[in-house]
Amino acid sequence: MSEQMLLDELKNLHLEIHSTDPVPSNENERQAELIIKSFQQTVNSLIMSNVPIKIIFMSLFYFWFKLEADMQRVSDTKINAKLKNPDVLLKETISLIKSTVDSYEDNLQSGQMQTLGQNIDMLKLLITDDMIDCKLPYDELKEKTAKVNLCIAGVIKGFLDQSYNPEIIANVLFNNWLRLSAFNSSITEKYYQKIEYYFEEVTVALRAHMFKVDNQ
Image (cartoon, rainbow, N blue to C red; front, side):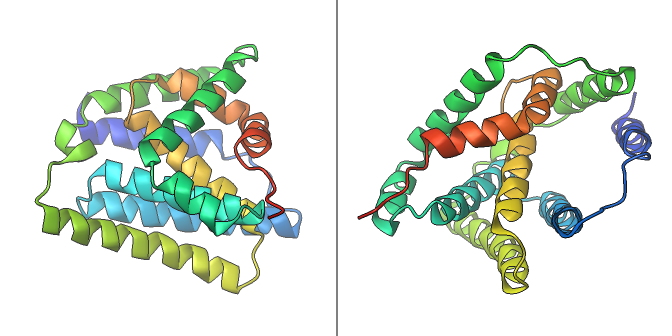
């Protein structure tokens, strides 16, 4: 199957799976729908402009952590100390996600979701190392990173300025990071779908263990 045929099938499957989704029935659901669409468009646009996935991945992670920590009233000193060691913070986050998800039974997947997972795993095989983490000259890396950060920060600010729920924004940032992490690592789509299934449990665990209220 060619890359374009695979992408077309993925799009059709996604539309079919979500064709019976209920329309938003309250303000939070309405906000979530708009925020999800906006970040999907932003991330897709950045990928199509040949920005290495790892840059987008790290930017989403940074802004998710920063917004989540702000909501939990963690001091700027502690936030900055954590963000000085992003690789350590990433490992801590991933370890907590895995331990949380692995404590639950595997979710039952529909035939459509299984097919979607198989096709996405096939798509991963077509992604080159350069698409994930291209070794760019320092100046170009700095320029692309600034571009990504500006785009994502702009989307966040736009919603916060309209008094959108910051927890919904944080959840969408986190979910987009999770999606890219599945392309940025060796986890199968089946396992990613399990993380999605237990998304609420994962976010509760992260908030309980990674973000402590700072009374200093």
